[in-house]
Length: 101
Image 1: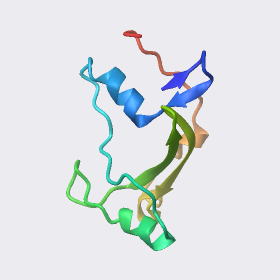
Image 2 (image 1 turned 90 degrees about the vertical axis):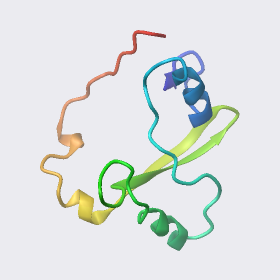
Image 3 (image 1 turned 180 degrees about the vertical axis):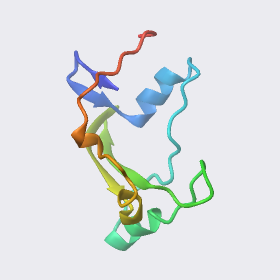
Image 4 (image 1 turned 135 degrees about the horizontal axis):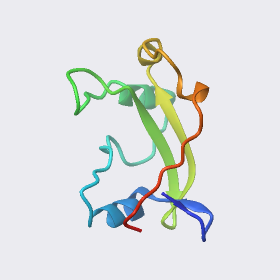
């Protein structure tokens, strides 16, 4: 969630607190902590998906402090990327709107 007044994205914890009062669910967290190697990151890509019989399509890595997101990256499995018909970057931008805030 982007906070226009503070000009930053919220941390996972802060977003979860806001969503607790709604029926919106967060994407599952598969690991919290510090990864010390690329091999450890690659191991996260072997995590079993909670949504289908297979592994996750990828993982999002977040660096947070003081209830704010400071950096984010997404690692996507190469076998997942090969099955995408049309990549999101080829589509137009569409703003999300929330009515309960």
